[in-house]
Image (tube, rainbow, N blue to C red):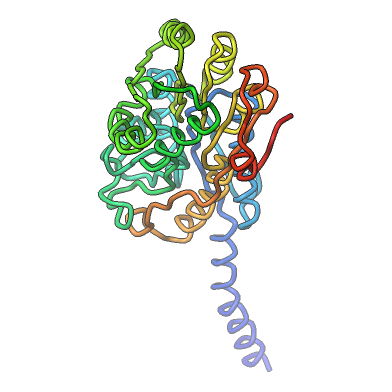
Length: 329
């Protein structure tokens, strides 16, 4: 009996070991670094919340089985580099970042920790990945704006404000040097609708105000505000300046239209952050960034502010209103 009891106990203990080991592994606290290229404001927190919601749906809860270390860099390149170094020093399992300055800083800080781009423009041209299908290296994630989007902005702006004869694409060349390449995508569209398009590189708010004021003084001026660390941080100011100088403008984020911009068209940034959680989950389960293809946005929104249109003396065509996901009255 003693022998049988011993064998039973021994067998039970042996069978329990793998389960205990698995349970211990499953309960190990994972660490995520998050470096945001936006301010720590309502919009920045909303993006972070979307990421956490996506993680929660996949079984990862902040404070229970995952620890999230978050830094907000805004458009300050020096602060972004400092935060990138801090996060890398913490040796997280994965880092989630957005905007060109953020991904550039993270890439310089580590070539081993997996990095997920929550929203980045043209990562191939910027050298962050080898290709969308085969990223290579330690970086993968989700794109935000592609070249075709720029032409759509121009078409919609012309449709909403037919008097626009020349438009500028505003961006900060220090935080988004790749935007010069986007101007090339304007050429065919601009010729087809008779609108001249030029770049309006601005490095601070004073230059932005001067550029928009100049547009307001010239008849037929229009403004295109693409996503950029600078235009995100100073988005509300740009909306106010466009209103002040009576310049029809199209933006990439819904918040700009809600704040009084004429219209916005672009991907849902919160959807990108929710989707980023799926790549965090896959990396936790052993996937390599090099084997995860870079994905493109799947959800786009057109928002039109009729109150602003009325203030500018514009009548938005019914066909354009019909395509809108939301109309602000």
